[in-house]
Structures are given as C-alpha cells and as structure tokens.
Image (cartoon, rainbow, N blue to C red):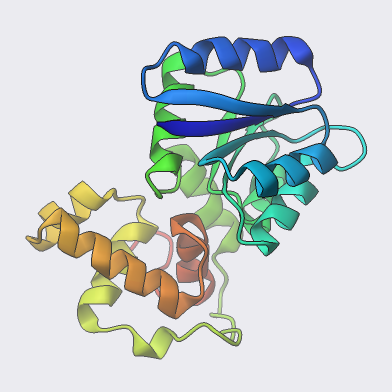
Length: 217
C-alpha cells in the first residue's frame, strides 16, 4: 500500500486529491497539512511513501518544507503547483524533490506520478528534462563538491549515468545495455551513492553540471 501525505493550503484541493488517490486499491492518504511547517512535522512523524507538496503555502512554503524534509532524510516529495515557473522547478530539484507536476494535469498522470515516486524513481518528463539540461549545462564543468566521487564510477556505471541524464527508465536502460532490470537497479543505486545524489533527479542535474553529458549528445 502506497501511503501519501497531502500538503496544500486549500481544503478543496486536498479533498480532490484524496478522492482521486483513494479510488486506487494500492493507495491511501495518511494525513493532510495546510501549511509547510505542518507538512514537515507530519512527513517526519507519519513517514509516508510520498508527500504531495504544494508550493505556495502560508508560514513555510512548499519548497522550504521540501528542503527540510530532505535534510532529515524524510520521504520522497512530489511538488504539485498551478504555476509552471522555471524558478519553482529548479528550486524544487535543488531542495531535494523527486518530481514536479502541474495541477492542471489529469488524474491518471497524478496516480502514475505517485507510483513512480513511491517506487524510488524520479518524475522526469521529457519537457522537464530539457529545461533542466538548458538551465544546468555550462560552458565548463564545475568542480565536484565533497562527497561526489565521479572518478569512482565504473565504465558501466558511467553508461548508466549518461542514459539517466537522457531521462531513460530502468527498463529502457536495461534494453539499451542488454542487462536485466535488477542489475540496472543495482547500478543506479551505486551511481547515486558515488555522486552523493538523493535520487535520479539530482543525479541528472549533477551529470550536466559536472560535464558528464552535454546538450545534444
């Protein structure tokens, strides 16, 4: 059962999300928060699988709440917002969010996103991937930060990282490299560990920041 926490300052929105999610046999809503501070407290206390986090909330906004949850190694966060602003997207990724979704999407898209995040993957739609590439690619690679052990990647792990940066799923990576999905999951886990990345989203950002891949390659 996928346990979900809803964080949104509008009761009607939370109710709508609850109805959509609890129609699924494998999902249940374990709590609701009307502001970011409550979202952090409930996320750490209830330990849900996924937090659906609005951006614009009173007291503490959703981006800061996400940052606090990530700092405590809390549950995965899926950002949900009405506003398709680049600054929201990039700050959400930097804060440690595992996905970014607009509220004007379909119920099916929301359900699929929750399942993807709960499975430990990141929600990187092609359009979002392109914007991440455009924003984080630079003329020269930046110097790796402490904890980023890029040089320790094996040739196979390097191949996996390149495919991750293109937004490939585990199944697509397995097909491209002629590997089993279980083997791919192991490689992805090792890549994340060596990069010091919380999840696939941050690994993609690092791949472009460190010059492992460049736009158009």
